Image 1 (tube, rainbow, N blue to C red):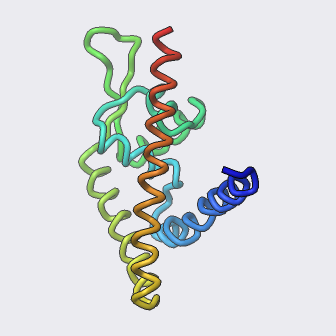
Image 2: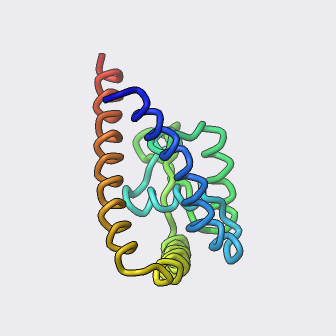
Length: 158
């Protein structure tokens, strides 16, 4: 693949994050004091169950101090809780609370409804194009993510 194609892909991908934030998360911030990072942490905890701060940081590519700050704010809102490991008191895991699950569901509903309203302003052809393109981008990014996971596993096992 020519270098110019790779550069275009890089530019397109770099602009996606701010556009997704503007269209997905920013409207929800008016109704919730949570940062996008806190929402991502809650989503991971809901999906994966209890996790250590280090695991959260690794999976979200966030520095541990940033994870700790976000988790502390979530604890203050009773959205997540710390759980001591019964086998090793030095290990502290975090899990989402029932209130956190309910709030996360509301946030997701708000984000989805906002996005739905925006998408419904598009014509059918554009919606179909976006449906196919978004699925393709998702599959490619998942493939890249899985390659990273394989590299991390190799590095950790070496």
